[in-house]
Length: 504
Image 1 (cartoon, rainbow, N blue to C red):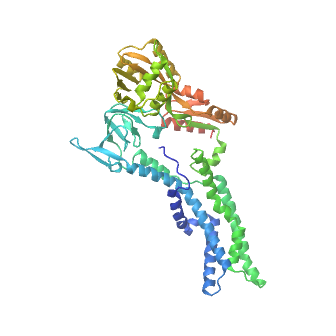
Image 2 (tube, rainbow, N blue to C red):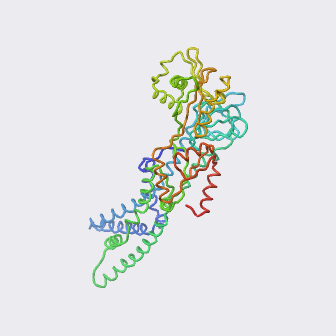
Image 3 (cartoon, one colour):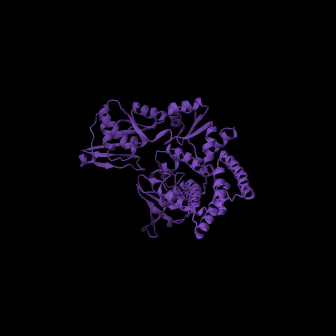
């Protein structure tokens, strides 16, 4: 589910990490990092030596400084590791808060309803979700039909229609109803929903050490053992020559010899690399993934939000025969003034670019705006005796009561073949023309894909769109291949097929 990126230094990460850095002082946990375990033991011995000299009445400033620096080194290493683990926990907490703050309208026997927190819903409950509301739980539509924004889950910008009966009745918690009202039967108990599974995946993810990090850890451990033996032998050798080495001096020497800084900064180096990727909108699940990225030769990319901007935009007005371009633009703008979707706003902007003056709802107090409905699949406005509608071609053709002229039908087919979405505009029975809605490919992507190709990396676009739309966008973006009408199972199958071929 989409969500905002959480900064590495967010309070929700830093404060728990500071607490965890002290809990990680437990020797049972520290032993996993031999270098820092030896440093912790040295800090403990130095603390005992410092306290002993203090009680004897001969406090040592040197011993105190060494003690403080050793504890600082250990705590810093623990803090770096805790912050590496804290990002996933913070993201899971953000999802959990979003789930618990969602309210649901539960339908009681007899037709009455009550507002309850989403987490109190149980399998078999019936809920009502109106336009603009978040669907609070996974369920099945039992009454009504509505458009639903599933971009948070599928990444596809185009809303989908969910209705009772058939294979389009399933809805997922966390998606948003854009129009109309649905009555939904809850099909999962708390802890079993899509949101709960996502939280479990995030919380279960742990920072894996990279192969280079493992190798370096082994080397540091071997060097630590060698230097530990060397330093331990100095005390009897010094005694033989009449030199008394204090515990603090031996510990300070050992910590200077062993690569303490490298051992303590391994986790910090890993999270610094991961955080830099996040700043570039790339999510690395582990340091291992960062290292493996250097061997990638196939890049699988989601279409919406990655290759395209994520929202369809109006790019062209195509008037019918005998209709002026400005007349079509004017009618399209009037029918879209109350449409707050990105597509509706883009139509208003495109009309303004054609010279139609900017209007506001306050300028048209006498107008009656008709909101988009999943049943009608149209929206529009009634104003001064005119009844302007825009929407899906089949719905507008039925509304006008006439067959479309040949040039309008050709425009609809042409837009569909290009991978766009045609919206037909009509003034009652008179068809004015077609609006071309297009998925906008992000600027500069064809050049980037060309560079990938030169590096030996093949790019594949994965989308839930139909093959015509997918082919048009793939050609415009410059990817090497595409997978259309892809389900989650199809995506997983493609990944496994590429891996079987030896690709990464």
